[in-house]
Length: 221
Image 1 (cartoon, rainbow, N blue to C red):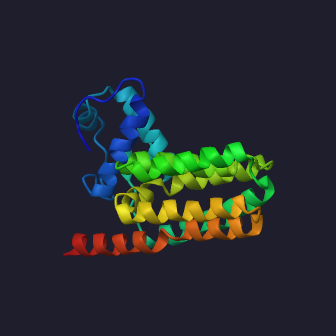
Image 2: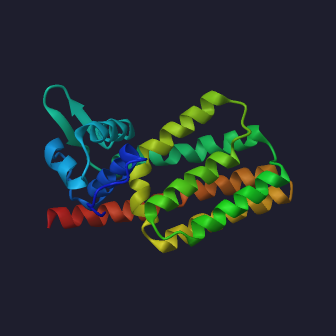
């Protein structure tokens, strides 16, 4: 991640992406205390937007805040992945079932978004577009509590998704899964679409788990 001065219009979000990537890269290792002064200087921003970014990362589970001490990096672990990752494969298909078959206009918008995902090369941009695709897919769900819960798990798995979407083959698998969902919806088969969505949301676990195992091996070598 570049350390040049960050864009002022989305400063906290851009800072959060930078710090998240540092955590995934190991530049900010698990257990490390975040030095706000040094990090703000590195990113070319003041401490106010940095603190906003760090608070957002705490909500993701990437950081913890110890009162009067500071921010600390939380580890990326297979145990946490196994706890968090399968949940959306349960929640999203139910939201789609409740939403029902989308309109032709929404299907066209989903197809356009999926094309943008396939053409994007930056992992953070891929994740943002993928999140947008999934939210649009289930936007018609009348259960707002369910949608809020899905948003919570989108946040909690984001730093794991960074590792996943850095590999182009995983992006291709994701867009292919989206195509399967949309094909079923075009056929009017909501049950098949829900099953395809569940499969799409499960595909990332194995490659992320393999990445975590490789990362742990490197750290203990």
